[in-house]
Length: 97
Image (tube, rainbow, N blue to C red; front, side, top):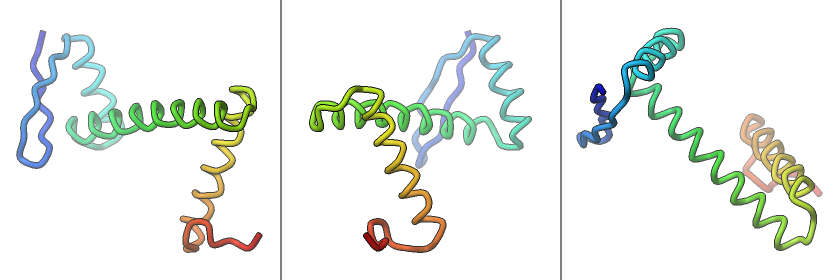
């Protein structure tokens, strides 16, 4: 098992990766043109965002009484609106109703 340390704000956090996983990580980071730290941090952020999305989906489902799949559609619709607003330069929620 190889040790891989992720540096975040001058703090090293060891992450233990087996040789196969480390080789895959190095290959993917090379393909993306970023260093391993950046690739690991981005992957972890995406993973955590996905978990947040599932939690939001469950919350929407329980509060609104809609099914889990319909709640996911609502969550994605809100994400699309926020994405469109961020690329258009509008403040979130400022679009005309």
